[in-house]
Image (cartoon, rainbow, N blue to C red; front, side, top):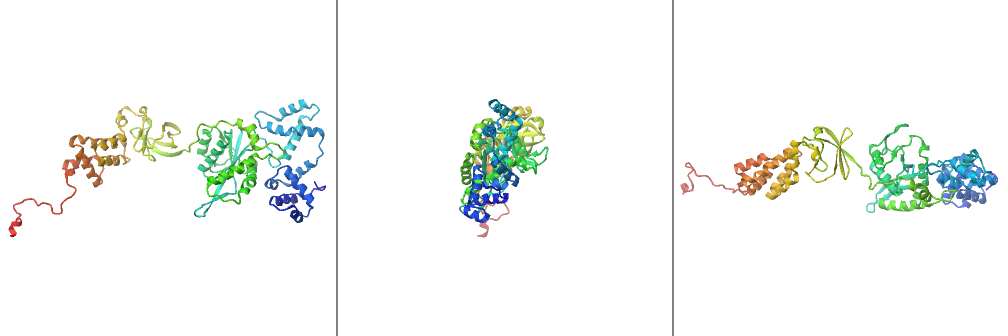
Length: 514
């Protein structure tokens, strides 16, 4: 290292130029220093595995202290203690391990070593030296820090050449700093939650807390003391048995670990992919995972272990187990409990039973791909397996009063099958009646009345009557009854252009004109 320390701005400029691929000879000419001096400073940064983003993020004071620590003449006693620091760094991430406990272990082996106060001081100095930007110690399995990068990656449509920018999701486990990165279409709730879920399955476990920035997808109202977490994201966290702890607004130190991870990802993921063209999101994410694997397996500066090895050794077994299946995003709808103790779920045209004491109430329906839940003022009234069978009923007998047995004994499927036995036109008419969205009991009575007419007039006449009603565009019991009563079902479809003139005394007839 040069005998006289140069200006910190020049030192930053040296490493910036070197990271951009400028030769040492050219740097020497630009900065005005000898090549030997340039080489020594570059070797110093390499020894600590510092990236250009990390160097640029350091203050002049932090950078100066880093060089001063490198110049210090260390005593044999301090050199002995420093050998333990990488081990202490790992152990402090474990639950229940404290600096005092580690000092006792050290002091038992070295009675002539440092006391607890000096032990703490030298450990803090070492932590600043090997990790000047971020040196907080997080317990294993405690928190997952979440954010999006400011810059975006893009894909190109192979047919039109249109460029689509993608958001880049980044999260990092606090203890091991094991990192996950994924490109997604937006920062909207659905995409955000999908990325968080993919991260949990990537890690193979769930931390005690999720720590997002104040994203709208995660936080609906920020607050220093009680931020309001997005309802769906809170439900997501409950499903995975964790909690959401949003960072404080305008407090960058709360999320320093993930912001530092973002800066490193720019160098280790964005930069290697900058000259490649991707045509799909999956293709891009595959390339991201390849670069991410290299990043996670790269040793920390000043230490002999990587994010991945630290995760495997210290943090993985501290994560909570994943559930048996992934979370299903839930959506909501409003409904009214009908007099037959059912609600009509319009999305699937299906009916679900609710306890009869709630007849007439407005309820909230929370549904996913596999389940339908009915709530009234945050009280769960019913939970059903979702059925997408049109006109069908999902009912529990205990939900209905005894006088509603009529509805419970009949179903849309039964009426449609019965009508099919009579004829296609009859079946179509019955379906149209059921599809009117009127009260199901009223629909069922109309269907029952029409189908019972087959006993009086037979299947053929009823089928013809249904055909005539469909031509009229009338779909109810009364029109069928009128058609049959007036014999309209027996009228020929093809009416002659010259109908027969009825006989009458005042009509002369054709012979009169001969």
